[in-house]
Image (cartoon, rainbow, N blue to C red; front, top):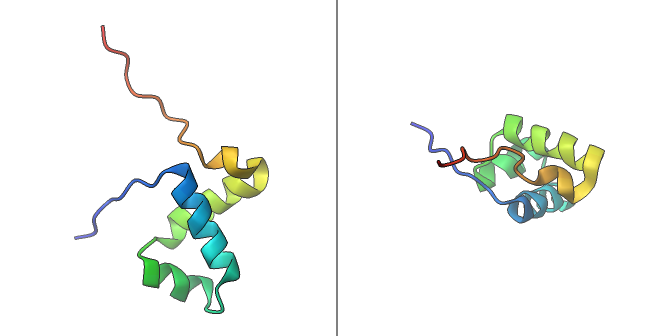
Length: 65
């Protein structure tokens, strides 16, 4: 069973840089660090569109009354 891990925007940025600079394929690099391709490509799309700010989690926690 796969474990879900939440990454901070700075960790996502580091992963993107690692993949970009790797001599391995994207698939092999992601497999070595344990990040799914779907997550990576979603982060990468947001990064290309909005820079590092695009990697910040936009979901807000529910307000407490």
